[in-house]
Length: 404
Image (cartoon, rainbow, N blue to C red):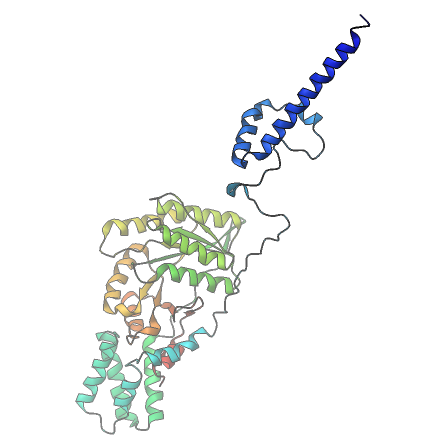
């Protein structure tokens, strides 16, 4: 038996050498395989179900279940050594004083209420033809027949009684008459103050309505900046669920000033439900204002207008509506009045936002729409910049009309 011991030792050495060769070959083969094939081979050989607590206990500290393979495109994560850039939040320009910019922009638009009115009134002897020209100028500027007649009668009386002739006196007389026509006594403040009910803070809710193409969603974004600049905490509601781009656009406006947007990612979602969720979220967060955008609607589409009424009713179950702002395109003139009438009946409009006022010679729409609805113009669009939305000021507006 002792004679066979060297033989058994030799066989054992040969067997161990053979196993070592196989192991080395397998290791080398795994390193030459493409990463994807290696990964598949490893996952096939060792699944999650195969792993046990004993495996974890016997692995060296810091070891992983998978070999150190080059990451694929979908596996690349955030590099912990690279700092994530902070989100840059805009600081909106304070709303006060913005309307001063309107002067030069109205002057560039060639407003007939400025140069033409002053030119006629400065003539030595005003004839009936001159007064007819003045009235025509007012009508072309969309002042409206009633307000135009009222203004002409007042100017006639002042010219006859005071005998105004010099340009400075004429300008002062016309300015006074126009300011009175625009009506500085109307309350143009926005109702954006939160209230407290039973110890719970209830945000102000502002609903924005209007037809397609008036710049409604952009106006909501600019109004958000106005509210943030005034120190309000705001939440947006993207209740325009007919256009995904509208919700995306509104979300972008909100992100620029650090404001959250409540929206639905489901096509054809109920706009009233989105509006309700926005108000509920605002109430839970204790914000100051919830600003709700709605889909652009044609005033002659009964179904869409009924839906707008539904949005208003649903919102009021959670919090009262403090403002309903109608966005009108100042360049549409008298057609804008037709839109305003229907919206006022359905949604209870409390204020007007006139967009594109800087690009029209029809500034008289301010007077006409206020007379028609009995509600004031509260905001005006002055251009395409993010802070080109200003609180409306009658005297600044008239000065803009008379500029140049």
